[in-house]
Length: 172
Ligand SMILES: [Zn+2]
Image (cartoon, rainbow, N blue to C red; front, side):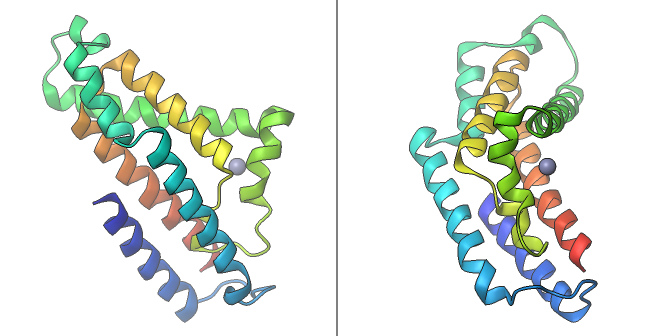
């Protein structure tokens, strides 16, 4: 499902960038895209290897084990879901700030910012080590909150689609 939405946003933004380009490209897409897609595939394979069930699978585990703050409150399910999405999003925002601020982490993160042109594929251009650290941050938050699998799925789809949309809009 996440892959389908990823591909959908990718195709729409890539077409939009072609029809209404805001920037002049330094390199043709054929020179950049194999690298950016290669990185995206590598990241996806690595994630599968480390955590085959992904963040949603981890949320199932947290649920089965009864982990997280959720079990100390009696909020309605929908409110817990919204809170989980907001907290996860904030954690990833904070992680991004930290990756810019700490020299060692910036060395990983600058791969994303070093793309010669900015287009929709820039949103999938992340160092594998950054992807794994980010997965770790998500797992910590999921375990701490006891975020439900559904809320994690919504968060993952939103994060992925908006990241691709925003860099796409930037180059359009
Ligand atoms: Zn950044």
